[in-house]
Image 1: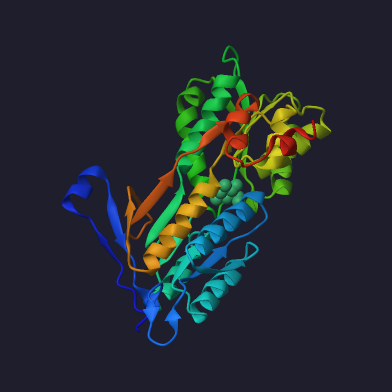
Image 2 (image 1 turned 60 degrees about the horizontal axis):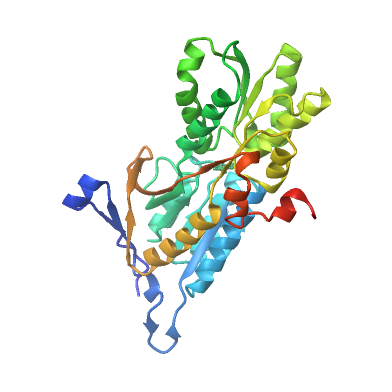
Length: 354
Ligand code: BGC
């Protein structure tokens, strides 16, 4: 059977009104259907990850693989260690191994357009997971509401600190190669725009942490401390690894716990730091829910079943059907009702043995 995909995005009249799009997958390789002599063929999914550096990606991977297996699909997982050339080669090798659908967390959303292009030529649909792939004929995008993440981080600073005197703020953005880093910044800008314009917030230092590395965030924080001494009230760190780097720099100055620090991902180390008072908040993204849904959608696309996406996002080349999940702020006060309740971390992991 031909491997050619016949993906179409059907914008039904009614769906335009309510923002629904239906993505039809390719019935690639008879996936999930009975083959003549060989019996039913399992759907083959390729999962190409940028990295497994941050703890969340192992959780995404495990939940994805678990759900795919439940659905009778096979998954090949490759991680590119933040290397674009390697990630394109990973996608090429998935194509060679004849997967029916490819799910990609791009290291560089621009560079991975190449991956979408080669997959497209082989008739294999591509889902961008968590981070969008720009300027490409991407089939589907599944992610969290990334602008909302930034908004919640920005709002937290304004709610946490008195506004009777200017809040001196250090901003640590994520990796420049990650489109999400821009979206988080946009959300933060939205939350802080008025406060910055009126002088309630003074941004004293800001920079991008390459590859989201804690060491790079620490360097940015050190530069801010060198410039401003202890005159810093808050650090708007875009995720938990950058928060970790900032807190290390603050610790060396005896300032950890005295400066408000934001984060994202609700990583175990970050939640432990929240309950011990060094980090102030994080954003919990229910990655298990996103990953399980992505596995379901990947199988649907591979077997030609329709997938409903309620949003669309322009990636520079086309309106990409998008599935968005919402996020939650985590603080010392709601650890139990968020990450513990969801089984993301146990109380014992967070607080230690009782
Ligand atoms: C993800 C964050 C993560 C960061 C670093 C972003 O694209 O959305 O959850 O912390 O990458 O891996």
